[in-house]
Image (cartoon, rainbow, N blue to C red; front, top):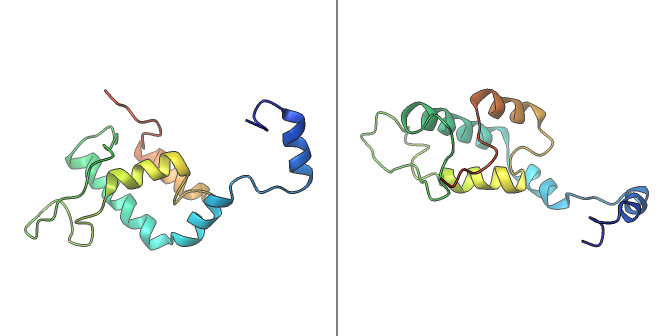
Length: 116
């Protein structure tokens, strides 16, 4: 709140080169294209087979089922709901990647959690 309600303070920090989203830079370095692609594929399957609105509940984990015709083995056990929440809240996997944001938008990604 030190800065939020005081634009002059934000401007002064901007002039000094203050890094506002340092935590997100860490996420960006940790998440490669392969990891994002797995999440993207999981979201496509979720949309097709579970719920077309892509409002993935935070508790949703891709089921472990070796005979699954829906979920490939490399996606089974993925905490998809938690990952979606991190994307929404922390920009995890997407900060600095406009192509990833565009892919999620094109898929119909739900940026706001629907608690209904």
